[in-house]
Length: 457
Ligand code: F0G
Image 1 (spheres, rainbow, N blue to C red):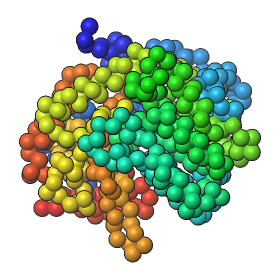
Image 2: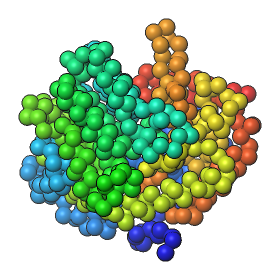
Image 3: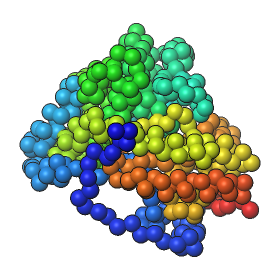
């Protein structure tokens, strides 16, 4: 059959309240025009993130009842550890309450001021954790990754020439490790090829620089490799994931993505000295090494979820949803990052609103219009999230102005996505009337979460 159906049926439902357009306008005003500050109840379809928003399976809920809440050495920990080791092959495994806790432990134990950490593209919490300890986070994405119209298949790849140049410029002694984010969330959820992972590792080995994967969406990345990289078509997703991790010396993971759970993360490494540092920091901040900020039941659910994320039918269905949605956008004519990534569709706000300057935040214009028009919550990945300030304090825009519609895992059906497409169609028709925004309040770190906006009339 041509139709890829959801490989599950629905046993428990959650009501969706649809508030009126007038109520949405009021809600957005009260939220200072920042959708992060909206009540979830005021949203019809919440595509703010795919992080921790997925639905768990019957197997996961059943596993939760097996949760062993012993402080040390619980059976739940044993299952979790065995599963993570089976997939990653890593020597040392530390559970954390979510991905950024793993990043925080990695950055605070391994970095000092002046160090430089390359990545294809750092996610915002990764960058913030690195900068918080006085090190520098640099993005070395391949040029296709910055071209929203390029149909290249692995637009999350690291630019090897830039990596080589970065090492030559700063010296290996200033680069305690290099990162690779699979898939590359910031650049459109684009995958990284196995060939690129291997080549990055080879280059780093010459300089004795360890490679740390940001592995949040490792299963989706494995699916893209299976789909599009020669030599992997008949390999299982688990096999491809194992290959991926075999090139890494460590990994940070948010289980809220491809762990298919609502909370959790982990940090792994092979090096004993790193592990000693991680263990000490973990005990101080997260918890005893066999639970690390999670309940036994969380570890159980994650152990099952990690393997479900590597299920072939699940990944085929998930990808089919994203492709279906992209075809709908083609019919409307709204520009988006091509080809579509793994966990989300990224609208190109710069191309949608050419009448706005980057520092009038076109992404915020689209995000807010989608909310008012249909109660869709999305997120800007542009100059608000990734802009920076130069040494004179002048704001420098981000190269891309994107709006991410992230797809929670196993949550919304095809008619929900049809509704979202209708809302986008409305916004697309009215695009010339969408105004820019200015920021009226912002905190020092991670401003997008809590800043206030005002529409420029
Ligand atoms: N790395 C990547 C690539 C991420 O996408 C995220 C989270 C993290 C690290 C941090 O993990 O949230 O568990 O602390 N991304 C979410 C998102 C928040 O919406 O993309 P966390």
